[in-house]
Length: 347
Image (tube, rainbow, N blue to C red; front, top):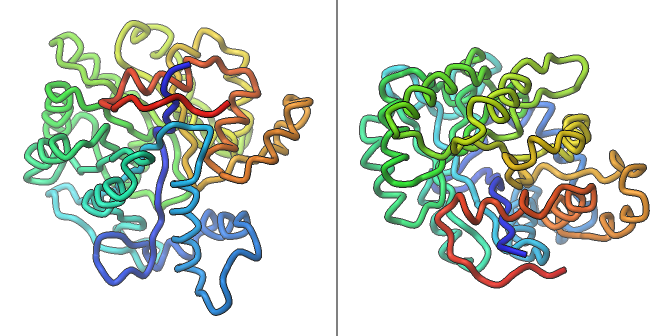
């Protein structure tokens, strides 16, 4: 079996003295943040240790102690930018046009350097930055294996000339783009229309004709939350593209967060869509937890092995393997990213 890589992991850091990473005041009151806190293991905080310090320590331990996966891609998150390319600071009130989660490339790169046998550098550069292309060259030279966008949050139009130029440069650098489409409820949204993958598909169609299409991986398969209460039009648009027009093009989708309660329906659905499997790439969306209880009947006798995995990254991987997704889903990232090849994971 080849190299197993989780391409979609985050490190959420709050109240640091440096400006390299922060969570906005608004974000601390959002439902998704409260639910995550509820899911965290109890009783692991040292006496007198505040929550933020403990939560950072918990995440770092999880990101550096997995055994079933070879490597994880740790993702930076650039700030929200307005249409002129100016970055917006932390959002404070409900309707602010601002940033809820920021993790700099420098912060992630330094983490990866401290744990080179565990972490791979996933950069994030907003295409509206005046020096975006130069920064893209910089992170490529620094060992980034992909770049991440969240258009509905960060305010990115796939048809903007700055976006198109950025995608061209990604193709020249062989730099994959991990990009979120579909709705977003964990972070505040600044551009709701950017949930639709159709404009990006239009741009990629044009770049493909010009032979300059980069590798693009759509996060979460553009799935909605809380099915059947939210429409699945973006998911169906993407699946049609993956299995039709772009079947032989470098367009893929990751399965990050699909083992969470709000998206479990979609993981069950793709298990019955083998035509889609050649387009899937493994990701967890750590620290979003996998919840094996959602799949207890389908896991059968494998359920006990899944729930005994204490590391959240391992648990997500073992759960999805046990559900029957083929090995290639979990090893495909090794062919898409610029990654060294250490040994294989433990069985």
